[in-house]
Length: 552
Image: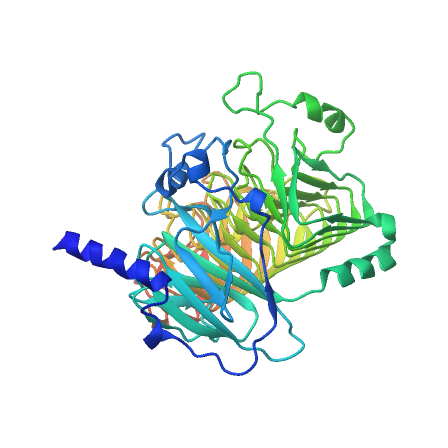
């Protein structure tokens, strides 16, 4: 019987791709076609798995936990780029088939790799729009679907392997199929249509012809880009620009010691052109820059690099920075870092990865930073504020995350995590979504919404988590605690949790780890699995005598 069911499922999947069974589900197109454009990477960048002797399963297995705590998923791909054509989905928008891509990610509750599929369209926002959307699945049936964030107006009609709907607003639409299926993650990014040539011309008029660097559609291969000291410059990655990091240092080669400065980076290191604590040039090193833009819809693929070979994008000692529209895939270490920066605007930046320590956004010792409408599914902390060492003025202050989506199988989704060597103040996480948070290896250290102090020297004040949905957490939804048992007389004050909805099996924990510290937190309009929390109920909270908690 099971064999017959499997054969029937394959039969349906095959013929649904031909649109034979789509009639009852189809949303008929009415009126003139809407104008839109879509993201398409150059054909030479997207190799087929079969061309390099891989199957889908063997490709995915590269993201499995290899059991070595120090070198989880250490080696990069040497035979294929990090983005492939999705084997699971085809998509039509306004009856036009658009490319669907995929890249490797990680599932925490199975410790296995997976694929996350994605596509991107661009729409003229000068008028109202409504786009017909059809998605076909391959290899699995659609029994149910949830589309996150729920604030998006999308009412799917689905049957068997076909889903139809209408898209009428910008946003990041993430589809969760069949309850907790994390193996078939899918996201469509719907973003504003920009005339690239017109925008580039405007930048050249504003900044000067020689101060606008344009990466055209196609593959651009280099070990790294040292952009030390640039000012009043625009780096424009056009749609379809595919920046591919060149592998240089072998993690298994004793002469390529990852803890020492590499020979090719020695001159820059000696000249003080690397950010504090680094001995290798990040892939994009924006050090000591002022009034710089990194914009466009290009992709940065770090899949060929071995673990810790280079970090991704780093802005250090920089001021007045804008980053918009960039995607980062498979960083071997922290993906996007700011250190001792001021006045940064980060928008529409999407990060995919699976490797240990491939943190997404690490906003360190920076002031006046906004991160908006960004998506992350990667292999460590995702939307994170820190304060490492440095000059006394290098505190973290006035950092805001809005309209962001997190999907995490290894660590924390939103919060202040780890290093608090200096003050962190006025931080907001708002209007955002956690899809899955299934990291369970240390329930105290890795809640979904986290204030976790592991190293201290400063204090934390005025942190707000507001209007956040956690679709599914497998451990704690909320944790605010002093993790290290050596920290004393540390203050966490004015922490607010407001309008939070979550599903999680573990209690929220507010605690100082048995030392004399102070934590003050307020909870308002919090729902656990649909039930409103109205008191400091032991069914929902674990805390100690140093925690001052208010529930409204």
